[in-house]
Image 1: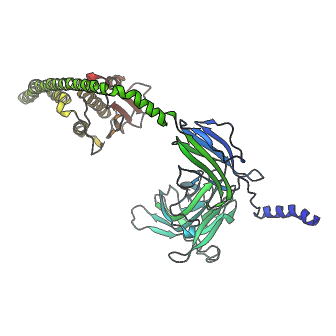
Image 2: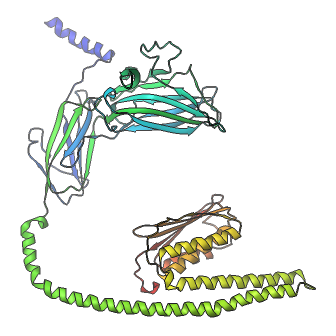
Image 3: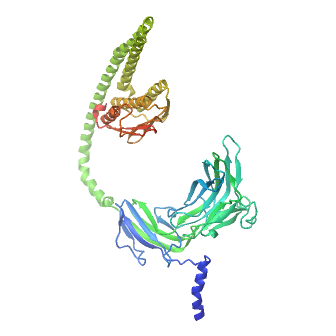
Length: 570
């Protein structure tokens, strides 16, 4: 017997050298419970977990920290958790495994990588890749300059103590050269590994490695026909394995090639401790928080933590409160209802009368501007054309330029009057009409200036009323921004975006022009135009922002609320 006892340490040392150290399982412990970020004192011990932990219903967030360590203080198992009464399925601690495409030049130097990540658990996972449903994945990128070969690398390495099981099948690399429609396809099957045939066989595509290569396996998938698949069976939180395409069998690419990696995968990925489970404000009731230790594939292996939780109901949810409240309020309901109804009817009638009066006044102003000022300015433009024709003989070039300037000014004034008429016309008090008119005027202006325009405006805008002053201010700011893009930024493309949210209307004008330094003078020598735009937005209770750098174009963002505290907007 003494000889046997002396042999035990040597057996443990030998096991650790060959990676056969037995798992020293320990109970899962609750290390902290915090309500709204503040730790709760007096946590139940491992001996009185049957006693529920009471949490106030006013708690906006609840977090529970838990851990499991072996006797050496290292994570030994994958941990999962669930709050019964809230979660339907087991939840994993956040972690991932990854893979990437690695491009090399002829000297073997790495020119660039394209990464992808696998997280959580695929639908239809049944404990092993051989019995689970596979999900298709694709990743496409462009080979960088100088590339001549690409490696495909799959890793079980991830953040924290990553653990899990992953199966890869139908791995394919497709390479399409520029100007070609026929891809070059590499079928990266698992044959040539572990006897399918031997790794020395030239048909083998994969080598395995990592800090513990034995975590990478080849298994047989029986559907649709028996064939090998690549597997990570990573139950070692501090080690990882890799599958890498063989360097002596290069996957050739050229600069500019479109490289697409496609594969099917079935996996369950998680992490060891320590873990944190976070929950938003919970409804009053009884819950059970469970944390379990599992194998790499997510199946429980024995250790479990169970903590009952009670979310107490607030005082206003008790029946007595509502009975008392109904008794107190019932006496005044009838009187208040009559008074409130009468008051609302009076206010509504007054508001309707005010709206009708305002509409009549605005219609009169619109008719006067259109019939008198608009007609007069149009006549000035026509007369300028006649003068230009009559004076063609015996006049100087300067005279013609002045006449043309008069004609252009008159035309601009006529257009301005038309815009004023549109702005004050109550028939245009809707978001949809505003968007259509804004797009039409912007397109006409930019096309005349030889600048391309792109609109990002929803086709199904809601029928939201838009007051005249607000529409007019937005319209002038947008026109000023477009004019600056053409006149000072020398843009070749202007993009106009319009989005509607619950809080208000968002407009953005972006150009690809030369930009300018916001800290210095603007291209026109001052910031007077920008200040005018900002002042117009302030007048309607909106917001104005601008972003620009030299050589990177300019983006102006406008915001206008859809509810207006200022009655002068109508």
